[in-house]
Length: 373
Image (cartoon, rainbow, N blue to C red; front, side, top):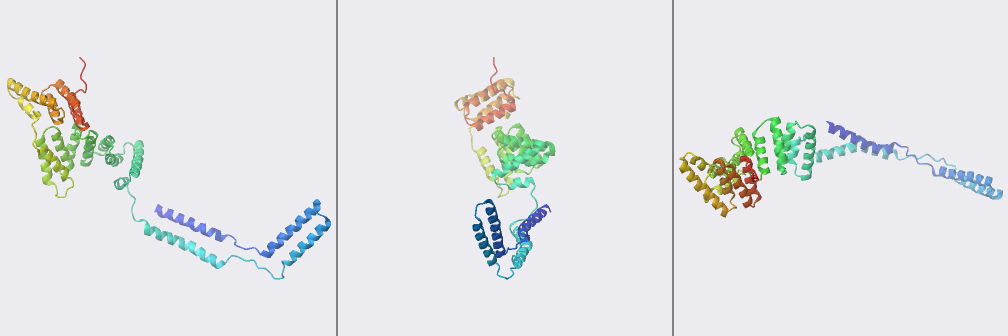
């Protein structure tokens, strides 16, 4: 309704702009009358010049006679009517202004505009925005709103996936946390939170990310995203069989045209390739603890020692380092686990691999620097 009121006001202003000049007196003065006025002004000026002594009496008399002659010549004895602008033309212009402008304007708007489209809410504008500058402008407006209304859960819920889309992972993590606190937990928010943590940690499924994906899976067991990342967590923890089982189950239920089939197939192929056994798994070490002390010590010493020696020769094996660190942690040897983690950080060169080691250190609460003696 407000839009139509604005349109009516603008149309009225345009019509008045056309009609105002037409309402003024368009009379055209008689040319003979204009000439007589000029001659009378000349007579008045002549009298002033004579009074000031700028011309002589004879010159003034001659000039006065000439001006009088000219005045008489302008009068041909016929009355000169007062001419007005063409009334017919003015009426046509007025009709065009009153009817034509509104009709043409409305026709153009109905043809080119979209008066029936309802206003888009903020979430819809975020979803359809394709211009980076426009999206950033919308984000800035929502941020300004949330700065004054931090308890607006809907605002955080709208902003969180946009942050994630823009690659602002830490801000997305904070926004999802606010949305969950204010609006409650659901599959979409928990999955988004897990993805934000995952991106912020360079692709490592940390304990917090895994908890978020587990909550999302519990709320919506059929959702493929949380299941994929939970299987990825199994892989990163060294349980490649568990990861493969999770991805196989996901593919078995996936439609043939599912867009996420390809990354799942690639992940499954990665863990299904034959690999050199790098050393003891955490489950193997835990099983060894149930053996007799002497047997357990010999078994563990052999497995862990062999893995440690192999990593000295091949320090770029991130999976081996992660398994060695977990093995020391399961055995209750945090000092050795921390030393292995520091050795891994020295041997690994790829930032993504280093972040995986750092994330495991954080999960196990291992010190990053060796304590002073």
